[in-house]
Length: 344
Ligand SMILES: NC(=O)C1=CN([C@@H]2O[C@H](COP(=O)(O)OP(=O)(O)OC[C@H]3O[C@@H](n4cnc5c(N)ncnc54)[C@H](OP(=O)(O)O)[C@@H]3O)[C@@H](O)[C@H]2O)C=CC1
Ligand SMILES: CC[C@](O)(C(C)=O)C(=O)O
Ligand SMILES: [Mg+2]
Ligand SMILES: [Mg+2]
Image 1: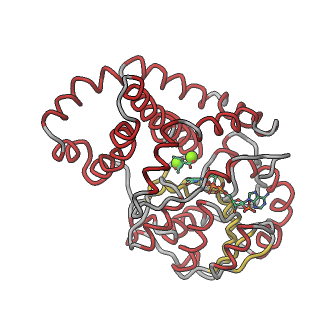
Image 2: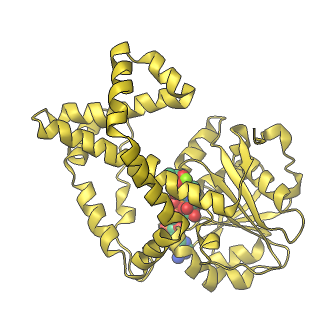
Image 3: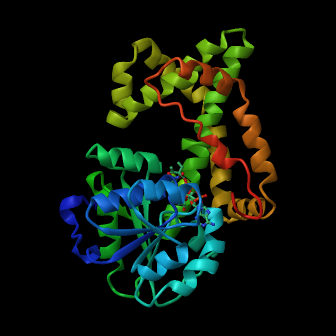
């Protein structure tokens, strides 16, 4: 088995005394900045003026422009949206990197697909948490963590691997496990996972189940609880103990239905489609489409996003969640709506 590293395997001294610039204060940015600061590291956040800037100041962090934060730091973690990174890198980061600095990413997209070409005299590595940023933060405050992958693309100083591991420990990931990969493997598996299973696969499965029930005349509220709400409770059991643990908790009737009907829905045909998705990622076709979509102000992204937000499962879900005060119901989607000339 591959070596998975935990807190006791990692020395953090190599990162102590180095200034870490966290560029961006969104999902991953706020989690990395706050976790690193609370782990005892010296953090500055690099931003443009606006909502995130105000939030980071409110959270007690040192905040400055992207250019100034980069110039002040030895380790520069780029946590801007992938599609924004090349422009901000060219305008504000590149000229402010010094020899021996570390240029760091949480996803290999821009380096792997050559949208950012780092200079030869810096370390380049990634530390990619295998979970949403808000959970990177929440689990850290609970004394736990989200596992992470690390990969070294360029080791100018000879210390890149040690600094990457110390960084992963600083954000809490070594509480859960840190393992080595390459930029190619991280990029391709991450894109595949989010498209075919975690996000695209899961939402398509949920909507198809919901629509099947509603079109057959069942109440939308019943369909919502069955196909979306309960999925979280089932996934919690999978997370805690795998398929066996989930199947231990469900009825034998459900387990038999799982065995005989699951493969009728997700089968060899589905796997063939998954292989097509993976091929488009590996050949760069997906990346090319996403880059073009952003260069043209996201016409398809915005149209699909609007339609998705008005899907009946979302309408009924909003109503039902409002009646469950223990569920945090935040209007988060507005941030995805508009892109004009590459900024949103
Ligand atoms: N989301 C996740 O959980 C995961 C993300 N990743 C990777 O982490 C990286 C960051 O993703 P994510 O956290 O989702 O990003 P977000 O979309 O949450 O990042 C938004 C942040 O970037 C800032 N920003 C956007 N444009 C600019 C700009 N031109 N200049 C300065 N700041 C800007 C925003 O500030 P403002 O308020 O001013 O707009 C905001 O603080 C990506 O590489 C992603 O693939 C990896 C693992 C999981
Ligand atoms: C699953 C989506 C993700 O890859 C993540 C949270 O890990 C992302 O890019 O946001
Ligand atoms: Mg991911
Ligand atoms: Mg991803």
